[in-house]
Image (cartoon, rainbow, N blue to C red; front, side):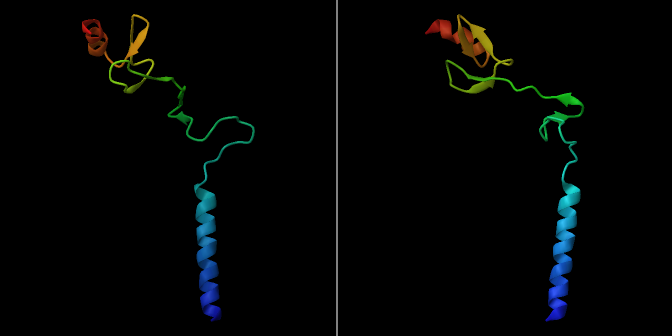
Length: 83
């Protein structure tokens, strides 16, 4: 019975050590979130807007504005005139 307890204790210690070593090292007070920086570039959040024609949500920087409305692509913006 004591060998089983020692075995379980060793497994727990190995689990705990792996968990501690796998945590990302973030200096306190850095103010950054984990995953916010990738490859030296910071990822800025962008607004997601829905297309007036199909309803698909697209980043604002990738969409098209036409006549005060937002579209996912130029084809949908041009097709809006035909309606």
